[in-house]
Amino acid sequence: MNDARSSPMLDEQALAFGAVLVEEFNPEEAELYPELVASYRRRGKPKYDHPLGSGLGEIVQAISPYFFEIGEAVIAGLWTVAQGTAEKSIEDSLAPGITAWIKRKFGKPVPLALSDGQIASIMKAVETKVERMRASKKTKQQVLDRVQKALAEGQPDERDGK
Image (cartoon, rainbow, N blue to C red; front, side):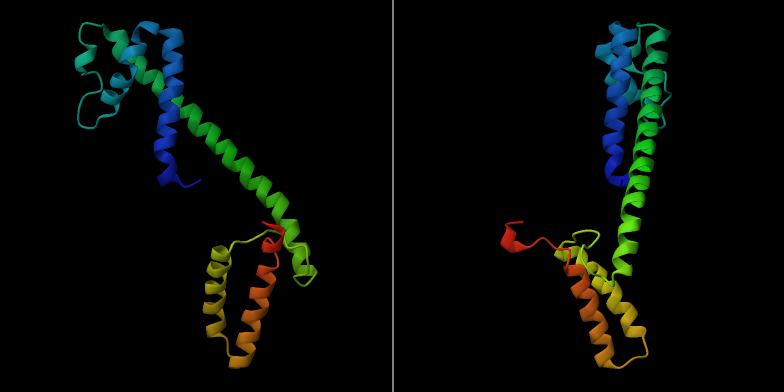
């Protein structure tokens, strides 16, 4: 999961998680929760100084950020577990397939179907490596053609409507 793209989503999930806790444990604060957390997160301003918090007592100022922090911790933990599980699952399922594919000398079935863009990206990296080889132009081209063919074997067949 890309942290730059997921950060707003994780913040939204943490805020929503905290909102559920506020509704359950301190319902009178639920309506003010988003503003109180926004103030809490604002840099350069004391966390307890919020215009909506005046006159509502210290509990309002302390409890919203607390529930938000719990939400952040839970959501971060869930995503860490999910990413760990996904990576382990991918590694467990893909590694043997790639090994078998290599042992079959790139024979079918190919371990995964690649898009044209994915193949192009891989081929660009391969071409960079091939350029450094001390081999004839003909050999270099044969290597490129073979790799291209092996990668393309896993593409969906357009005749099948895929």
